[in-house]
Length: 232
Image (cartoon, rainbow, N blue to C red; front, side, top):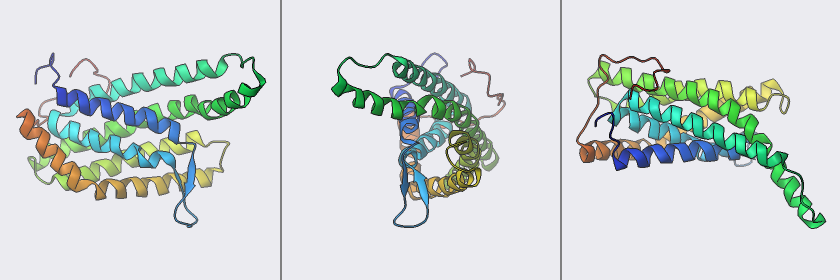
């Protein structure tokens, strides 16, 4: 795949990853109890791990440089959504009294979006870059063998970096620090378990895309600088 050409499959995977990231920012404030246990998870746990699964597939098939490009694209578009959510929350209230509860409910939900997105942007950038870097380096070192182990180790590294940044930042002043860290650890375990269970599907998907694209990228002699955005 040349620098100037992106296949339909690449665009679909990248778009799905970006939608998962942006949508998960709306789900973060909704906490839920797990099966009557004294454990809480964020609603984003249902969706956010999909972005890491797709990140694994992007790096495995297309390489670190194109994964880095998608990470930056997700970063920019997520920031745009957060900015627009804040602007809408700042608009004057409606004239009709009956519409004001709806506006207040909207603001109570979307007022958290800029805060969660700022934390999410930094955490996602760090976590996804760590995930792609580990996946890429392990693939070269193993000569392409052991996709399952590479996917698990890279996802674990990315999720740890992401969650330990994201949850204390989002729930600072909302939950005690200990509770926020406990939520972060619980989320890490839940997300990694999610990805382990999805591993057969992830491996099948990566193999299918490789066959369809006719490529299997090995990142030899590349620059891993996460800020080389134009190098894709």
